[in-house]
Length: 454
Image 1 (cartoon, rainbow, N blue to C red):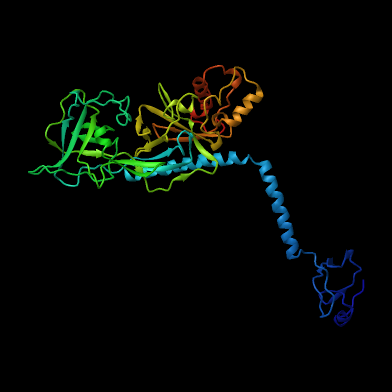
Image 2: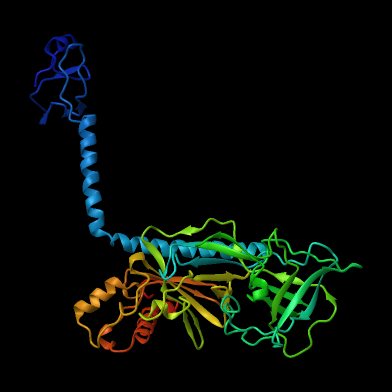
């Protein structure tokens, strides 16, 4: 190995090592060409004009090309290694809805008044709800004045002398059929307790069919009799409308009601104080929008009780070929008390009795709103037939998700549908097959177990 002085470095252009020059030969068994030479680092040239060592790094363009290639490869690999896109979307939708319910329960605890959720079919008979609204119960109304009172009288007899009772009609007395069939009707006159007993007009766009009036513990329900229907004002659109009793043009001061808990006693006499409990209305929270292509499948969603199971479509028109098409959108409301438990479940304005659990099915929009026969299987169907049905029916599809809500404590759990062994079924009529399939698919939800049945 040859060494020279500092001055000779300027002329030779060899590598510099702490005032020593290392040519490209072997130096203490190390090759000196940008590498270690006798424990000294060859890192630069000393003199101007000396040749620079070649760079081993990437240019900016080369780096960008590498990044684009890696991004393309990763983007192609992830869908292969991950579950399919619909499965992820449905799972995310179920978790999002569960979080929305938790928010609503928190609101109820904070205000001390019931809050809830509501969803309705996107169109009549579609069987699919695409968004979930928040609900809240307005404060009790006892009139605007300290002199606000109500006077209860039996409704007048008909022109034929018949006693006034709730009976189904062409355009009235059908919403509470058959719950109140034959129940006596009463008229509640809202007045001021002054000398002239002036009418105490109810505020417009405030009360609806189904609201309750409490008079000394006696519960009266505003019903859809001809008297009340003639005083309704519809607000909203065809897909989201609310009918109020009384408007600014035709205010109401007399409302016809059914006495819910009469028990045969005499109606309250004289002027009485009252409190009107209004039905839930939309809250200020923004609706929870389900991801595109995902819906709450109302055909496979149920309210369960100790001795009954109610699927949310209000009649069998979704399940039979011969029923006429429905013209109204089914609407479901689930209200939570301040403790988080479910206070009531409402289907099309009617409270369902003794509900112990609500199960909501989330799946593909295109698999909702099945018509009669689409889920029917022959006895011992083939493997191909069973696989096809599992693809086309949300409650049989293992990509779907079930959100189960226990009414006792409001606890909610997301689970998968249980596998339905179609080889052991089939041969029954449409309705029986639908019930068996849905019940079998809800096995994990019945046990309030999480995804995977654990």
